[in-house]
Amino acid sequence: MAHSRFFTILTAVAALGAHASPCKPPHGSSNSLSSTSSLSTDVVTYSAVSSTTKADTTDTVSATSTSATETASTESTSASSTSPTITETASETSSTPEASSTTSTTITTDVTESASATSSTPEVPTPTPTTSEPPCVETQILVNPAFDDNDDAQPWSLGAGVSVSQINPRSAPNFLYNTLNQGRLATAFQQRLPALGSFTYELNYFVNLQTAVNGRGFSCRATPSIGDQVLAPSVTLTDNGPYGFRSSSQAFTAQIQDSPVALTVAITCEGSFNVVIIGVDDFSLTRLCGAT
Picture 1 (tube, helix red, strand yellow):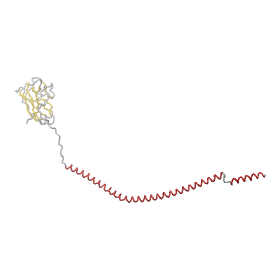
Picture 2 (cartoon, one colour):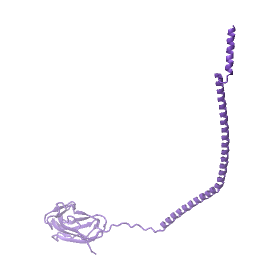
Picture 3 (cartoon, one colour):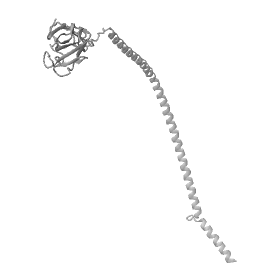
Picture 4 (cartoon, rainbow, N blue to C red):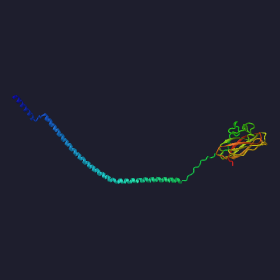
């Protein structure tokens, strides 16, 4: 029992000694102090930051206020100094449309003057183009005038009772036979011509009384025409003569000058006869130059 108490006392003394030693603080106590110190440091740091933040905020607000004030002042000054500029600009802008209006008026004036000048200029009628007549060259214009180029007289067109013959022509080999009787008192043949213009032409041909059967008191003739323009007839052939080929010639100016026409030759007979044959040969239609 005594030994047990002694051990208890010794333990208590040791414990006190341990608490009393400054060099070895208890482990738990040391942690507590360190934690407290850290907390205190954090607090101080927070306080310093807070203080700095306030100072910065104050400075910033002050600077901002000053800047805002200066800016406001500057803007006020700018606005004040800009106000005349705006007024001047408005004045310039106002004058610009006037200039534009003046320009528009000038353009209108120019157009009006141009129109006036145009209307005051006398209109010159455009001359109608005319086809000048070619120079006159004396030319025979009929094709196959003596009917000798072929056996069908082309380009002549032959009517009823007209045929190509080689019996007693004026010029060999061919001429035209015109056969008339009491049932056919007229025959005709023709050739198309170009526009004759205003030139003078001379028509020449030959006619002959070839045959007359039971002819007593008859007469025959050839009558040429240019379109509707009837020319003078040939010599009249009768049962009393004349005999043989007789020439017929005349000059004329075409009434239709600007259009193609046809030369038509009609052979007519009248009187008492059964059959009459009239021969025609050697036509020519010649453009004359210098004729009056």
